Image (cartoon, rainbow, N blue to C red):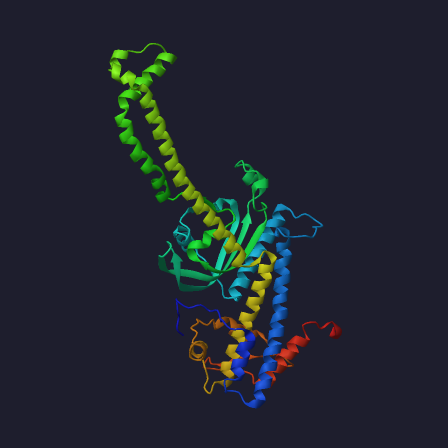
Length: 435
C-alpha cells in the first residue's frame, strides 16, 4: 500500500455523483444497477441516523458554551460540569473532523503561517493567553497563482498557499482574566467563557490571523524606519547649524528659572543675540516640517490599517461558511458523507473485482481508479471503511457485510444479501414492538 505525504483522504465528489459513476462504469449488470442504487440509498440512510446521534451528543454539550443560544438553562452547570462538557465537546469535535477527513494544523504550521507576511503589510499579534482552548483544522491545501495590484499599471504575480477549508474552535477565558488586564468587558467583541466555532473557505495561509477576533495590528519595522529615519536625518543638520543659538536660548531659560548663569561660558557674541528671533523662527519651521513628515507617514500607516480592517471584514463575510452550532451540523454532514462514500467505494471494488484483494491491494486499486477515472489523486483511508463493513451485520446468522479468507483477502456479500443485511439493521434501530 502506497503512502503519500502530499495527498489527502478527502473524496471531492458528492455521494450521489459517485453512485451514478459506479452505475455507469460498465462493471455492473443491468439488473445489478438498480439494486446497487437501492443499497447505496439505505446505506446513506443508516449513516444519517448514526451521525444524527453524534450531532445530538455534541450539541447538547455545546449548548452551555454557545454564544448564540436563545434558550434558557434550567440548571447552571458547576465548574466541574463545564470542564467535563468542554472535554466531551472537544473529543466529539475531533472525532467528527477525522471522519470528515480534516487534518489538524500543528503548532509549527500555525506559527509559520502567522509569521508570514499578510497581503496587507502590517505587524499583527494574536494573544493566545486569552484562550482556554484553541483548535484549528484544515482540508485541502492547494497553491494558486494570483495577480496583486501594486501600482496603477504594475501587478505582481504571486503563488499563494491556500487552505480550502479551515475550522477553528476557540474557548475564551472568563471575565476575571480580562478585568485583571483593565479591559472594559463592554469593549470586547466576544463573550468571555464562551466557545466560538468558525468554518471558512479558501483562506491563504498568510491571512490566518484575520480569522482571530482578538487580532491586533501595529507598525512593521519598515513603517517605523520610514516614520523615524527621515525626521532624524532632517533634524541633525539643522540642529548642528543653529547649535550656538540654541545654547543662547538655553541660557535665557536658565536665567529666568534658576538664576544668572555664566554667560561668558556660553561664548555668545552680539551677533548671536541679534539673531535670536531668526533662530526661534528656524526652530519653529523645523518642528512644523518634522511634524508634517511624521503626520504623512502616520497617515500612510492608518491607510494600511483601514485596508487591513476591510480585508478582515471581507474575509469574515465572503469566506465564512458557518458559525458556532451550525459548524457542527455542517461538519457532521460532511463526516457522514465521507464515511458513506468510503464504504461504498470499498464495497463496489470488492464486488466487481475478478481476483481476491488484500486490504493493501484494495487501497491501491481505489486510488488508481480515482486517478484514472477522475484525474483525482487521493490517499484513501482503507481502515475505517473495512471496520465499518465488518461491524455492519445482521440476519438470523448475524452475517457481516465483509469477511476475510485464510489468505487475509477481503470478501463481501453479493448485492441482494448485502441489501437484506442493511435492511435488517435498519428495521431494528427501533425495535420496541418486539421487546
